[in-house]
Length: 116
Image 1: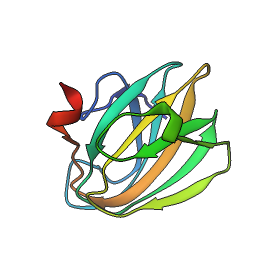
Image 2: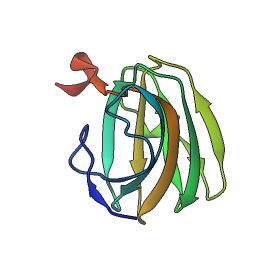
Image 3: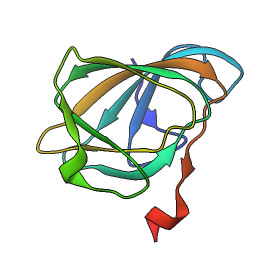
Image 4: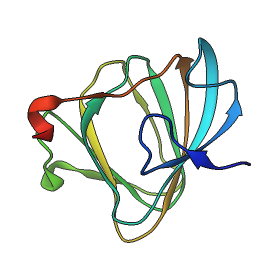
């Protein structure tokens, strides 16, 4: 795999396995979070599936970043996310690698009220 800066969030690294998430069509991508990386509330325009490959990933839903509302997804966890659902995520004390699949083009829309 070739890791490169994620086009939607340069604090993350990504590796395209199938397709290209920035273009129309199906894609499978691995995304790497460094320890203590937090991503504030945002949405994606496409339905997605996620598999946690390594590390424990934390996710919460809503327009306000609230660590108390997050759930822990350990390695092997799988979940689906409908398009345009507001969520926030973080990797805590360890790196996290996810596998994400969807039908592009993908994008990330920041929730401005939450990011001020």
